[in-house]
Length: 363
Ligand SMILES: *Cc1c(COP(=O)(O)O)cnc(C)c1O
View 1 (cartoon, rainbow, N blue to C red):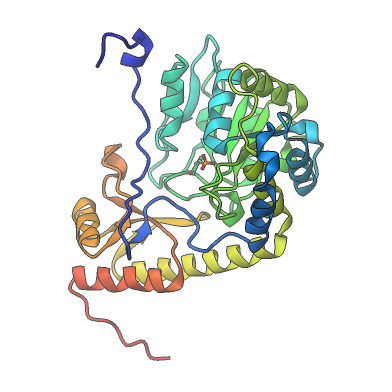
View 2 (cartoon, helix red, strand yellow):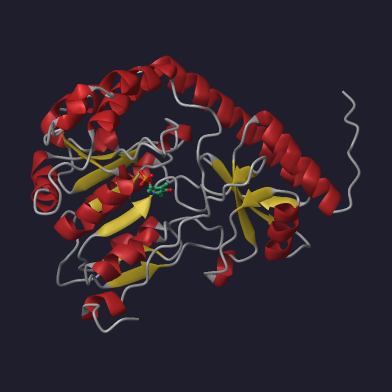
């Protein structure tokens, strides 16, 4: 605390990102990064952009990147907004679309940054509980009455469970008067995308990131898709805050990443195959594993305390994410999908911790 802080700062509760320790040999399955390196074309494009032109400001409109994103999703460039990671895009969207008289609706368990933005911008929040199987209940969002907007992640975080497109559509149809933000950070890994619904729903904003599927968490590029009216709202906020959120290297790298579709397809195949294998192996070790459409699994052991398991893994140099709160998920671990050897090391470590000997699988 400091007497020099403005009053608003005293009331903030900042988001706590997963740790990024600099320990060699650590198996890092705690922040849902891609375990594989990004496309070589990305590195080439960045190298090429790292020249004399760095003395010049980047394109404030990010025209080329917006054109590439629009083409990928079958939209027009004026339906695309880009930002410094989807976290920044989300922040601008909260400011632009959710500061209303009525409360913003969101699931009680979702990406924990949403509540942080709401607090930063003075937005009242009403949480609606996930059901007993930790799924979003669309019905609740139809019965909620007047609201100042709706935000959720699909697939949801940290559950990994995806809501079907007909359900998303039902939610939109029941809420024509408020902005609905669908955060698709993990949609490439198996969730349905709501992008096809943009045309018929002017209130829909879909937010995406290159951090997860494109292996570019370090480049900080995210984007929003929606009808020009919503996009213009975000632009107004951005140009009142920072006209150049993406630097020249990020713009070049992001364009190259989105154009290397073969790299993306291969990476998604590897991650989803490992996810299915890891889920089966965890179930064999008496974990309940929620059906994941993301690049992580959310799992709870039948007998052992989650915090203790996370500590025991840490002692073996494997990091996973454990959330103390809310209490309903305190016995779950969120485990990012690693490379095959990393997943194997995790399963081996868990076998040791749980006192299981490796099973010989006969075919
Ligand atoms: C990782 C994540 C983000 C943030 O992504 P960045 O683009 O790296 O800022 C946003 N939403 C959800 C649900 C995420 O898991």
